[in-house]
Length: 476
Image 1 (cartoon, rainbow, N blue to C red):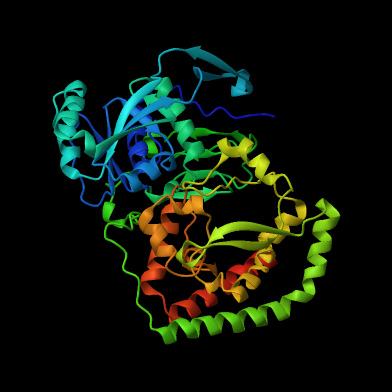
Image 2: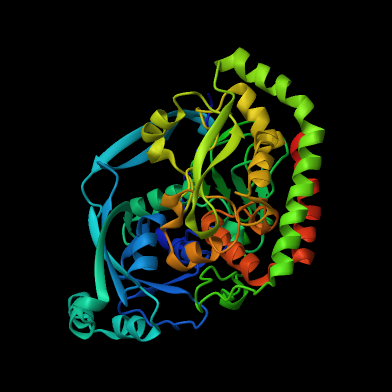
């Protein structure tokens, strides 16, 4: 395949920006989209009030890691300071150089290995503004770490060791690697970056870029301001086409108050009290709704079961152990949409998990059968859950039913969602934004919001909003 070189060797390192942002500022906005402010030792900057957490780093370091690796520690232990020993997951550091011939025609990539990058580093997470200020004002990295260890008792701190990606912002090749990794990792940069538009599934361009509709993108690509890629040459990612310095846009400072908060447990949840009559009325509604739904859909069951059998044999149903009201275990029934060895294969796919929380999700999951993909897309696989509603395990509307392991990730969230029956549909299903890195945080937020505001008006609104979602899945 013919590729297109996106390297801009004519630009000096300090001239490289994308969408008007220097790489270090793109890094900071990546973390800001997760409610986290980067606080660098020795660099003066305002410690904002709207950040949920502060990530304390040494000045030269840029880092990328998944929050789900430390989420359990943050939610269970609730330390004043969480020290993180971050190990670079790359086995060897290298830089890639594009070799071109006459007329800038692509010839090949050259990979040049080096040992200049940082392989390990220390960072820390805290929710306390005064701790971030103390870190920032220390005279040097060594004294900053010492100050933290002296001022915060051992009982109020803990340590986690995880893998991630580490880059040195002082090294131009490290900056290039960092930006390619970020383009590959951050699928929704518009969460904290203005003036950009999505192209296809994985490409983003500046609104000031001139991109022909015929241009093909292979992998994640970021196109800066003033750029005009050749429409006849595919752009191969992960890659970043830097801003043309003459067209570089002016960027406003980040407005933290506009970022959707993810920490829904700033205060304990307060479940809405319901009378015995209200609880009984909802149960009657659930039974009537489930009977109507089953009477309308049961005639289709033999056809669904036959399709499953012809492709992958039995069983037709998949009973998964979930928790219901009060933490009682029940078998949540669905039509089987995955291969019979799906659970065994899951261990081999763990490294490809794209979810930011305890759930497991990968795009184009190879465990899904062809019939299963259709069942998932149309939500037909969920129909047997109406049997669970009749048995009293579930409700028509409520939090998503989850297994014991998922419910352990946050005690307050667990207590909230287990105070009501789980539902076939719920607030999270109709309000989630699907922004990268936000899905688990929104899951917690909307589960708690439902418990605090539960009532027949909210249930009817959720059912009404669910209808177009189901129809879209069937008709697309």
